[in-house]
Image (cartoon, rainbow, N blue to C red; front, side, top):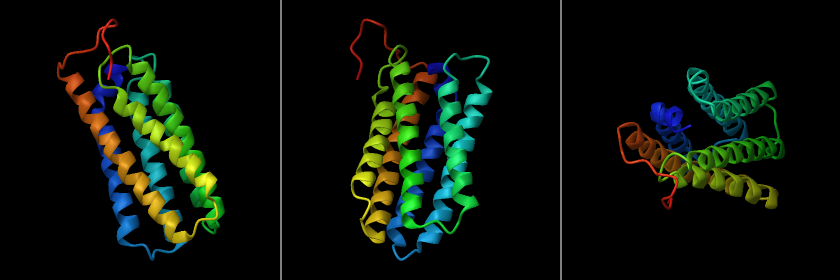
Length: 190
């Protein structure tokens, strides 16, 4: 798993940067209509899925854990396509898509981080990004009646924090790819 993620560390960084840009746009343009938010989310989810699939597909013969990013990519693409197939979604339907995507990708990122624990120190960033995504999904389902502006700000906040965590994880994995010390099984992990 470490070789897979460290080889494609830049995909995590790119996904993180795109998430941060998406989050900043949500704050900078709070008057954006729900329709535009639906289209932006659909595009973001689809592109995120393509990046995950490309990394998984490239590593499918070398790494046993290639299926985790594959599942994450498939989930992201499916949600992105579903978003575009019905652009007249209501805010509640958009919430369901966002919550489903955030929860599924979060669970898979936590699983990938746990798999990394055997191979590297600092896998905590991957686990934290997944846990944060799960908590975001729970928060949105807990407060589904929040106003559109609050929803946009919640999504923007999540995207910025999640994106920053992915960037940190990507650079940590880049260090691992360039010979940074690996965790041995007996050492404490961060």
